[in-house]
View 1 (spheres, chains in turn cyan, red):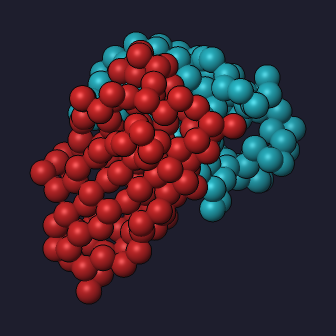
View 2 (cartoon, one colour; view 1 turned 90 degrees about the horizontal axis):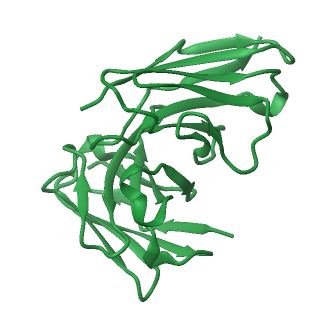
Length: 107
Length: 123
């Protein structure tokens, strides 16, 4: 099983600042890496897929990068609606596995 | 508009059974693989099972292997998860998720999610 490790667990950021979230895979997942955004009481929502392709409905301030085992999600200028938990997930191997999540909170 | 509506959650007894369903609309259901993902209270996401669009391929997480069965009815646009031999650790919100990519589902993410149904296993 591929273990996905996200850091940090919690990120405290002021509105307008940049946020950088990391995700590491225990073995290569190529570019088969997705990021999901989850707000309290809501289902997760696909944010980024194939490591760097932004899903429909998300603005350009969200960007993803990386391949192999190291991935990054960057939010260039945090808006109030971006405070949420972000999960990375690999879809290169079975079982599909998620990171434990990074909570982005208001500083 | 893609819509996924789960049902069937509730209180289950340890060792008992529950059957979850997901009604899909807004896309050609038979073309897409579907999956179940769960989230224990206050915890992260855990993939449970997947079924191909035709229903001829299925995969399970070890946590549900031998206890859970995923199935679909493409004539009714429904996805099911039969959960047997329930354990306390099965307590979670269960999400139905559509997999993107059509025939390339093997390497595609979960592109749409339902709102989830809560399963509580307790005596």
